[in-house]
Structures are given as structure tokens and as C-alpha cells.
Image 1: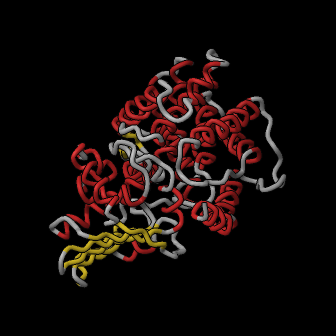
Image 2: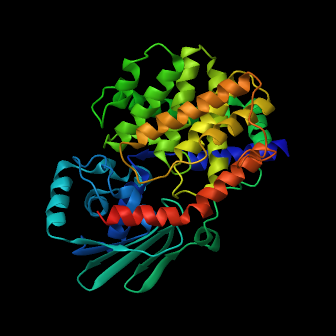
Image 3: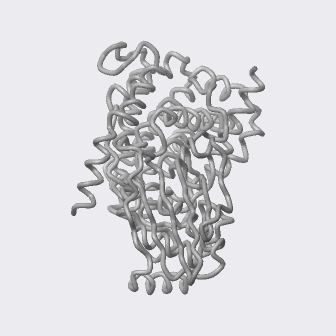
Length: 423
């Protein structure tokens, strides 16, 4: 059973910890558009992008990487069609050149791409329809960013996924994810099996954090945070994590290793842990184990919420980072659970009003809650069960938060989208 869990958890990490350029929603649109263009076999003369509310919300304000500052659904779709390389998946726009950008801007001004609202109960759901002459291609994506469920050409189905993909089932088995199994995996996994994943995560996510710390993106939040307390390790954790997010949301074309389909969650669950280990001279092996713990705990929490919702994923990812700090400090399973409960008692929900540079500030704020949760737990202090949404076990608290994010905030999500589209 132990070896089976190890194999399943490694498969989860390999599925989830992948590189992506920029915000994952516009990149997903660009990827599907590149696939459609390949199937069409020629440059489309018209494109329709049918997008669910959460796709609209998360592409509304964010800069697209490698685009010269372009923003919006139409821009992402056109760039994917003109210069995207779908073989690169979530790095699809790496191949875009200045000529491609100029072509996209020209087609944008001509109104070649139109956006339609897709009234779907699936938060991550969109369809790209491209036409040229007598031919037309449709690519439909559901539940996760590269989960193409159907491709049609001239009315004929050329690809259709199995029923699991249509139902949103993950390719990997998540059924054994729980705090005890995650901790046991982190404690015992052969380091050489996770080293390649986390060497890449450390390299990519810290590189964009350093880039963000230059202050060239958004409000320069990392530099601001460091300007009034540059010595404390927890301030550095907040500053570097926020700076990485700000660079990513601000159009930086450096890749991020994502978690749960999100670059910001990949950043928030890793950068604080890396900074803490660096400043505390934690052995590299312990850092790898803590990162594995943080990744899996983030994924576990998001299983209850879903990829996209009105619930900001920074809460889940920073909660995992705080628990990973407790793990680094050899906290017991009970102390780790207390960190989770303390964090979620303090910050049980922040609204997601789309991807943008201010996501960086949310990461910093949520990380404050996680750090406080860690401090309390390491001193043996924890909020009691049945206070608010806290349950007897941390897993129960996590499931309650997930229910709020997935079900309770569904109407909140609709109202946020209405407000954004009504401006």
C-alpha cells in the first residue's frame, strides 16, 4: 500500500507540476486556438471564442506574456492562432515573434475574433471556433486548461475524449490524498524521484521572483514590502512570493511551475518555503520534502474547490506553505493540522475577481494568515473545533472551505462577473 501511494502521489505531482508562461487562462485559450489552427490547416478568417464566466473573469485584466503588453480574450486567441506552438502546451506562446504580434494587432483591429458568453455550470469551459473559406474547426476544453474533450472539422468529429475527461475526472487517482498520507509520502519518498520536479520548480519560480523584485511590474509590491522590514524571514517570504506573482500577472514571459492549474498557486505554495529554507539554512533534502508536502496539500485542498471559482486559490496555496513551514520545523501531524485550522479560521475565503497584478497583494495577505497560523501551532495553540466552520479534523475543515468555494460562492461568482462585464 505504501508503494502504491508513492506511485500515485508521484503521478499526481508529475501531472500537476508543469511549466506555464503567464496566467493560465489566456494561455489555455491560446493553446486551444493553436490546436484549432493546426486542424484547420490555414489561417482563419474569422474566430469565435465562447467562454464561461470564469474564463472571462480571469482573462479580463491580465497581461499576456510574450505579447508586447496585449490584454484580453481576443488577443490570446489570435496570438495562439498566428504564432502558437501547441506542442509546447502551456508554453504555447514561447514561439511568438514581433511579426506575429503585429499580425495579431492588425486582425484585432479588423474584428476577426469575436467573444461570446458560454452559459455553463463548468467554471473552466470554452470553445474556439475557427473558419476559413468553406472549412470550420471547433475545439472544446472543459475542467482543466489543456483538457480538450472534442475537436470537430466541417461538422465531423475528429477527436473525442473519454467519459472521464468530459466529467472532469483527473487523469491520476486522488482518492488517497489526506494529511497523514501526504506527510508519510514527504517523509519517506526517495529524494531522487522528486528532485527533477523540484529542481525545476526552484529554478523557475525563484527566477521570476527575482525578476519581480526589480519592481518593474505592477506596483513593485516586493520592493515595497522589503522597504519597511528587510531583515525578517517572513517579510522576505511575502515579498518574493508577491513579486513573482506580480511579474507573472504583469506580462513577464518567464515560465512558472504551476500547481492545481495555477501559476499563482504554484508560486504561493513554493516560493515562501524556498525562501524560508534558504534563510534558515535548511538542508536541501528537507526542502524537497517540504515542497512535496506543500504541493500535495495545495492539490488536496483544491480537489474540494475546483480549478476555478469565486474563492481565491491563494488561500489554499499559502495555507499549504504555512503547513510546510511547520513540517520543516519537525512539527507533528497535530501541529501541521493546527496550522491548517488556524489559517483557515483566520482567512477562510478571499474573493477571486479575476487574474491581475493585485493578485500579488492577496498572496501577501493570505501568507500573513498562514504565518500566524504556523506561529500559533508551533507554540501548541489552536482554535477549537466547531468555532465557525472549523471541524473536529483538519480534513473536515478543508472540505467545508471547499464546499463554500465550490457551492456557496457560486452566486458570488456570477455577481462578480456581472460587475466586471458591466463596467
